[in-house]
Image (cartoon, rainbow, N blue to C red; front, side, top):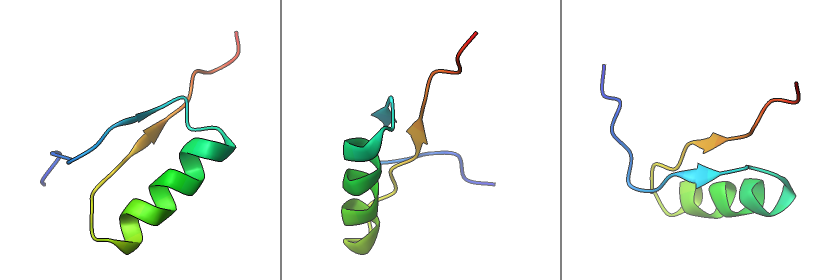
Length: 38
């Protein structure tokens, strides 16, 4: 299982999700992470 990525998106809110979609369309691996509310 390959766990590497080209880009890491931190706090994937609306802007981060749009960025992740754009990067995915370009073939760039970009997982997004969001802080969980406690």
